[in-house]
Image (cartoon, rainbow, N blue to C red):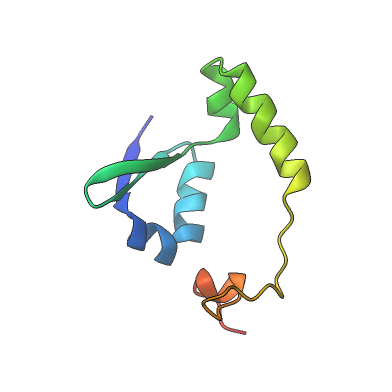
Amino acid sequence: MNIITVSATKARNDFFKLLEEVKKGKEVIIKKDREIVATMIKIKDLKKKNNKGLVKALEEASAVLKFDKNYVSPLRKSVPEFFGHKK
């Protein structure tokens, strides 16, 4: 598996590009202040690692979480604007 390491800022700015890389089977490690804070990995690859409890929790969470394109954060940016999309 290929691994890509990016800063949190780059991950925010290039989220959809990184998502495409994950879709192709790459793992993305996200660092903030030189510390690893998150990893993006394809769900199928996660299942292969035999993390049944984590996979179940993620599947349950995905059924609960909804994307509201009209949400305005306290910072006055909508979710799409946060990810670099203009209204």
